[in-house]
Length: 312
Ligand code: ATP
Image (cartoon, rainbow, N blue to C red):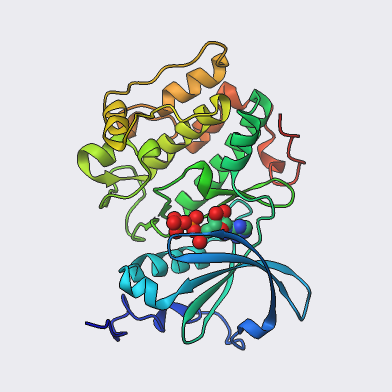
């Protein structure tokens, strides 16, 4: 059966590109407004290309999503979540969505360009980061996470592939297709659970595996995994297959290699904790996490103005 575009807002591809409520009507952009450049990357149902707005010469990244493919693969929901979440968020550590438009075959998301690509590429290139660089990137990721949580958003799939770097080598969180927006009535404590399984094996929190529910603190677990990975080059929990990885996570089976910095070890041990409520920074106390000795020397007030440290 050929899937039809229904009028239900959850599956309506026309609905997903409408302007967010409350914004002034502006002329809808079209592909003719941009000069397309190199392909930046491919997702499972999208291609991202560099683009220049011909009227003001500004650089963007345009994500092109194939409508038929999205419907066929039942990804309409995720496409909607990504658009609605990104429109809502406005922070230097989160990739910005400027506009969306469509033609008969594709949806187009005009995004902030992240010239330096994925954080993962730099981890692979360098092997690992030194403590100072790790501190800076952990601090930027943490403040971006603090911001999205303040907006009632749980990312649920934080990992170095989903952390992009702009021209200044600043962090930009991306890939909000599996994010969860908590209802405004929810007070955002970690008892607020978002159901259904999502995420990437190595960064999945134990509560997702055992209770099939994620919470804000699940993003803190992922942050612990990322800090460990920045310093060692590999995630803390990695089995020969997904099942083995999950086993290691639920048994909290990981170890610190010799030379792992003491302050970072203390921080990671306080994030990789089974009970989400017991993680440092859980239940709206990210301020406490920022005060951890590992972050000594970070100037939180100008974190998004100071130059990024040279990677080493
Ligand atoms: P999947 O959909 O399979 O999870 P994905 O989320 O990586 O994959 P996309 O968001 O389409 O898929 O991104 C595809 C590639 O384009 C990624 O490798 C990413 O690094 C790159 N990319 C995405 N957004 C930008 C951006 N704003 N600036 C620069 N590169 C980007």
